[in-house]
Length: 298
Length: 289
Image 1 (cartoon, each protein chain N blue to C red):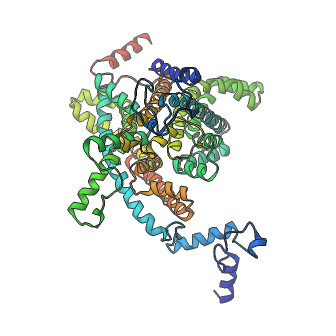
Image 2 (image 1 turned 120 degrees about the vertical axis):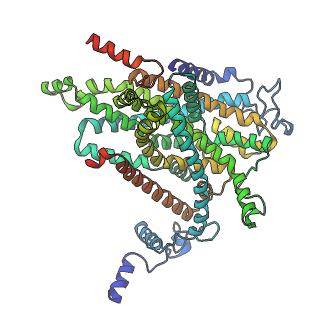
Image 3 (image 1 turned 60 degrees about the vertical axis):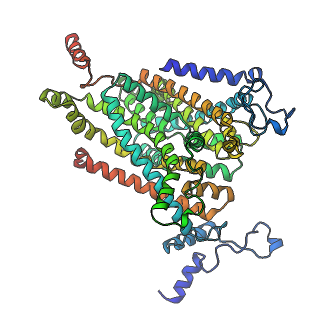
């Protein structure tokens, strides 16, 4: 491309001017000839910077947004990761047991727990656990590190973070567990009423074998889809839990950025969430078509 | 199950409607409030203690019930209207309209509700109308999907074909034939949507995005948490509004699941049950023909 062509492209997309010349564009008489780029050129400038990996500079802390969000993202992933794994494992096992023993006391207890856990506001459960945990168990109240611990290395630091992680993870697990158990139970109930279960029983397989080999495998399919699609709900839960426990994660970043009108951080955080949710959905669809041979054929 | 839920809901509505008569104190009056009143323990004068401003928690609870229920009902009304219209249109018309509407619904499902709601409410004015509007326009996706699948199954019935043969217009068929059959499921689903709306409203209030002049349960929790409730050990201010939310949402969920069970019965028994009802039921069906 010739130099004139490059310059013409730059002028067309407003890249020869800075993004915002001044903030007081509503009063041109007072502030002279003040221009900001129209929205479409701002979008192109942002996208161009994005391709370089530059997400802008935070209004509040004057640090690059990508640096800030990197730390926050890792913290949120730690919190969500542990919580989801425990909730999924427990949800699958307990849902299976509840469906197998349907209409007995175990099932009734599991259903009640699920319904109550589903009706709890996440932040309220966090507050209650925070109160009980700090008063009676002496667990730490806020944040990720106790004072001075972030400078330690190795085992002590790990223990400290783990101590701070117990209550938020417990809150997250309980809320997710309710939902997963409910879904797993209804799916397994449907699967267990299919004819091949009767065949397996007639063949003489033990109950445990039937449950694990036939029921669990077939019931996993909808669960996998739900787990991946739940990422949106997970982000919502993360915002609440991080606000209550002051866990320095993406949710808290969004909340503080909204309060302080820190738009670059907000844009960056939403971008990360959007990419994560899109990838999660894509992954869910691919995984589903991999696991279910009936879908592959079509 | 539905009956228990209905009773719980009715109790809450009763308290909310008759709040001015039942509440021992008027929470808005600033009389007789001193520093010593803040975070008082439950006593004979204040059955559930006082909150961070010295006003009675029980009275705030009763007045807060009103706001929480109003926001829940109106926001879910918006959601149900949007979801119902989109669902019926997508199911009935089919083709390109259905494709576009369903893609749009999928996009709205994928977008996380809470961050979007937080940003929308925070950047416009945090008022009651805004909250109702925002919760309403974000909560319709489940209803739309459900109504669409129900419309698809109703559309295949013979009387719709006959109505077309006579020459009824589209709107007539929708209004007279499809809508009455979709309505029961819509009602069952709307109860669940109301419970979700109440949860969303309490979350938004807790994050500080509610109208500061109205008391709702989420707002009570917000004040209690951010104004030193945990460090004062004021468990009454933290526990009571949350229990209220759980009570209402649990009641609505039970009611909704119960109604769903009536209109859309799910399977109750399976081959690994301890009794042999599965086989005997099938034998009965075969005998009766």
